[in-house]
Amino acid sequence: MYQQNWPSTSRGQAFPPPANRCTVQAKAHRRGFLKAASSLVGYHLATCRSPSRAYSSPNERPRIGAIGLRYQGTVIANQAKRFGDIVAVCDVDRHVRDQAKAAFGSTPYSCENYRDLLDRKDVDVVTIGAPDHWHSQMLIDACRAGKDVYCEKPLTLTVDEGKLVSKVVQQTARVVQVGSWQRSDERFRLAVEMVRAGRIGKLQQVDVVLGKNVTGGPFASRTVPGHLNWNLWQGQTPDVPYVEERCHYTFRWWWEYSGGQMTDWGAHHIDIAQWGIDSLPIAFQGTSRNPQSSGGYNVPIDFESQVTYANGVVMNIRDHGDNGILFTGDQGRLFVNRGKITGLAVEELSSKPLPRGDWKVYPHDNLDEPVRSGKLDSIVSHMHNFFECIQTRKPTISDVSSQHRSVSTCHLANIAIRLGRPVRWDPLDESCIDDPQANQMLSREQRHGFEVG
Image (cartoon, rainbow, N blue to C red; front, side, top):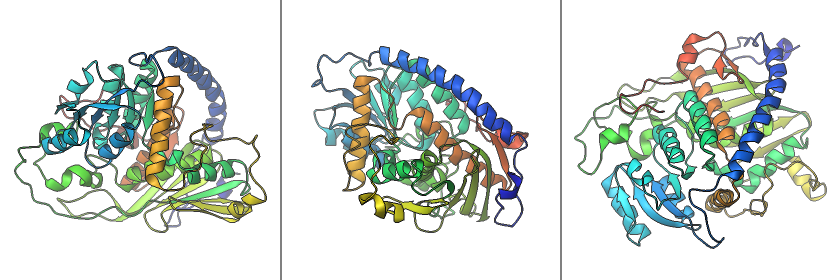
């Protein structure tokens, strides 16, 4: 019966279902029980562990070390200092580092290498705002150093990194919040609760619009600025001549360091979409039509992808249209983005409110308060949740488990796009089915001396 409703590609070719789809669903129930039991044990261990130091009173402020302070790194550090004190800053760019040191005052310790910051006993909590290709290793090292971590999204550069990060976080029982702050926004939370409550009927399809990848190039190589440690900035990625456009904000448009809009916006929108879908992805396909120019940005452009879930829901991901998430059920539709939530079901809420006993995405007093004034207020709520969980040792709203699953979907969609053909996925073994080429792309070659592990 799955074959009849299976989606077609944009070229009209039927996308064959995995032969073991029913098996995957059955295995999901069996393994889901075992994983739940294992997670429960891990949770109890986590709640018995103390933070990196014991706080003598609720008024005692954690001491924060901020790693990576360009753009979003500064945003999250500024929000974190509402709940603690910035005592150390780190960035491979001396100009950025010096600006941060001056901005945070009280003469915080500063360094170029983040490991020097992690060695400090006066750092309890770490924020990570470095480029994407550094997230996994910095998070792993911070957890092993006994720090609780707020790490910017996307969580990882590859699927295999996510497996390792998940293992280390469980072993160390650290509290980790990933910066997918839309989970702390009233609009997105309400959208997921309404979808899961059946307010648009049985969910059938989700359409996610991320926006276009930036184009540009070719770019000229230049002499490395004296204030930048280019070797350390590159980390695990190939050693290449310095190109200004590879660094700082525009790293997002290079495959070596990120995944373009698929991981940049996808870590937000695809995460919310999967929260509403409540199932495991089992198949991917994707296309991109116009290659980038040689020597310039190299993430795909004019891209689209399609993800099929074990419960039959199909998610379409596109780079054009109204940025946001459209949930379609057999009784209605619901659209949500950072500025609005619309649909008949939303209009009917005043007369048909969600019952108090209905399922909630993440019961939390602070997050249940309306957040109406935009992005920064939602980030504050997200950060509040992190520091609250540091005290309680409970899982955060954007924990590593959920964010590994979300960004893995982003990575797999990118893999299908790059291959230009369907990819079948076993979400329990976390491997591509009968596809050595796709499985090879779950990781990347890493530069000697900077291997993630």
